[in-house]
Length: 207
Picture 1 (cartoon, rainbow, N blue to C red):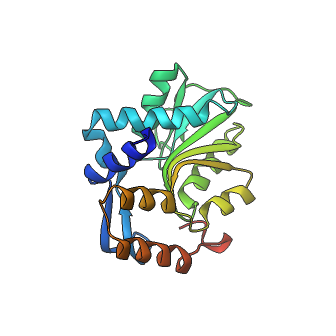
Picture 2: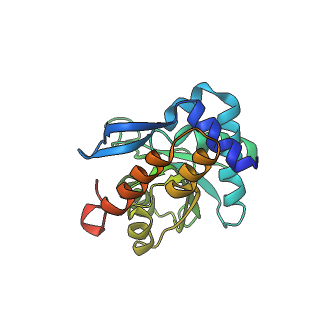
Picture 3: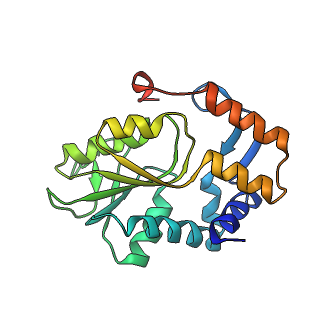
């Protein structure tokens, strides 16, 4: 079993990948749900995911990291420590007192910032972070993500000047889990149908 296959199985076994008739955050039903927040309770899983993200990032020119709040922040932090790369954090809202900052940490205008995300669906959350970083004078052209759900988000981001590199596409992930006998052919078919039926476009990019 390859390192990526082992990682996929670890994500499933930790409960970060779940299957069933699940209500998605945007009010739609989905046969597959990702909860990568559980990774913070599994240090070896955190290390493995962050190592893969850093490997993809090694091909990108960047000076600083920023994780999309909140699920991606732990991955960005591990990447920062392991690669000795500065990190900044985007607040959900501007601080209303003292420094009144939207970004926490030290950075300089013109620096290349690599964005880290857990899952891309419509691309809205990642794009919101990118817009804030650009408004603060940072240059953002790339993002590394754990899972691309293949529902149009990567295309939305590309149209906004962001190239997305993912550890897994949803197709790759379910194929690995089927090969490892974690799921059945019926589940695979349900997921593939979901990918085809649920596609986001530019009009959905703030979801």
